[in-house]
Length: 149
Image (tube, rainbow, N blue to C red):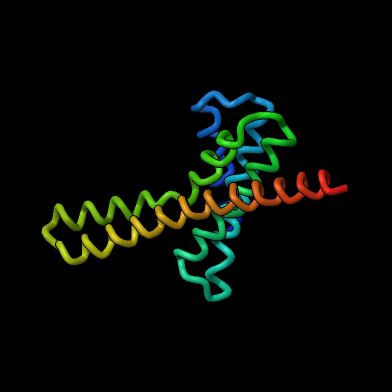
């Protein structure tokens, strides 16, 4: 039940983000698919022993690669899909808990939660960069192979 609820909410939040930022209507479902893919990887990897940072990094990388593929297929910029796809991964509740700890005077707990938030945000950024880099290197190698023949 938790899996279905998470899949549905990630689909809706990613599609709503795309709708909010005026992506073409024909790409809204693809935006939702990017969000579902990222959230599913984020949800499954901890069951195999991965930490939250690693699962976030893997999910962001997969969203980035999927965004590049969808942008080629649907002929729209990849940021439409990558930004909508990482929405379910953003650590908003963790940042809220960190701020709440600071407001309540629990500074050590607040610093710990703020560091966790920064690490998750860094994992998202690193995953997005890795996904773009992998596809760029693949395209360059393919182009170089064509020139060699």
